[in-house]
Image (tube, rainbow, N blue to C red; front, side, top):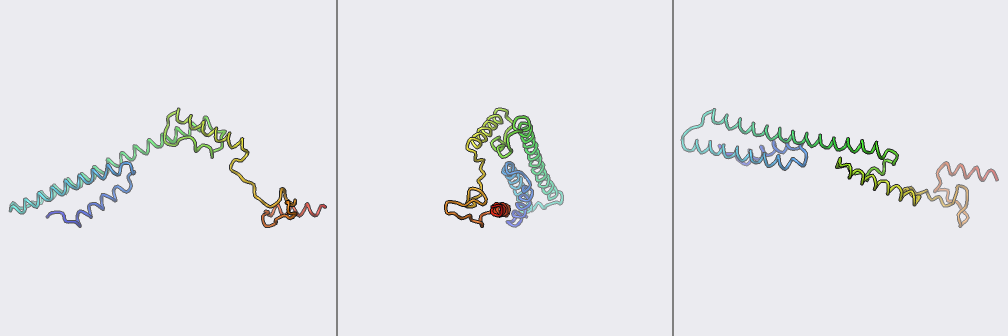
Length: 189
């Protein structure tokens, strides 16, 4: 009555399926607890097999007790993992809410693209302020360069309808609106 490899694999699949919803942080801890429970179950089944081999005979209560203990151990692992995952989720929500309130209070006038400098993983006021300073510095650097990461399209002329040094406007690089503007400029001459 010992657990064969197929039984162990089936139990491991059940454990893996149970852990699939758990956060990665707790998966290792839950896996260790589940493996300990599986080892305990294996030892108990081996004990029953030894009892049977010794000619003592197994009762339905012996088997029921081992199965009940294994099922209870599985539920305990699941409940602990779920509880820890819920605690972690609540902690992340609290950090996210603190960051959102900080941004609303201190960084509402800074474009949201610069909010990436404000840390996502802490609610520490000093760390959030340091991130805000980085965001302000990045914004000031972009403002000083006049760049903002936006590059004007190269249409081959300094303005629609004006020729480049070569004397020709590249119409293929112009947007429809620019082509209309160029046409109106030419018709007004």
